[in-house]
Length: 160
Figure (cartoon, rainbow, N blue to C red):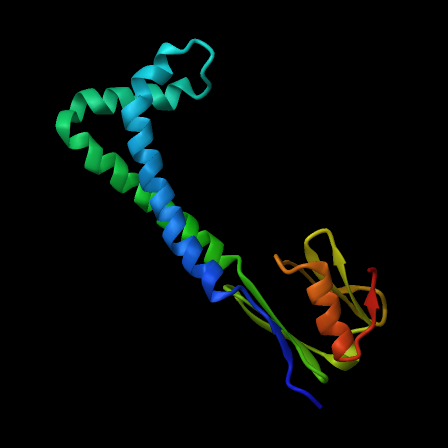
């Protein structure tokens, strides 16, 4: 009996998300502040309401608006990082059970209760003997990685 196969978000991906989203938010805050006049001059430009709000904010704060909008962009990026972390899923497939962990907690499914596993869109689905779904969870793992993990531990894999 081998160790369970664990599918989880890589550290590199988590680090990239944690750095790039706040950086992108800061850049967005700066860009909106820098280009809001040009944006408002375009008749066809979408989202004129929020950009007009930035224009009023710029008039109200004056020179102090750059750090505020860049800071708001960073906060938006951090909020997106937290949302992304809360949606991360870890799947551990072993000979005797499947363990699925996410921000909301951990669920364990005994092998005897799992008739088959499959992917439906981006969702991992575990099916019970009576045909009901034990689990349906969105994952970012590829179909092949999931199939290999389940097949390696002798589970019935439906689909590709």
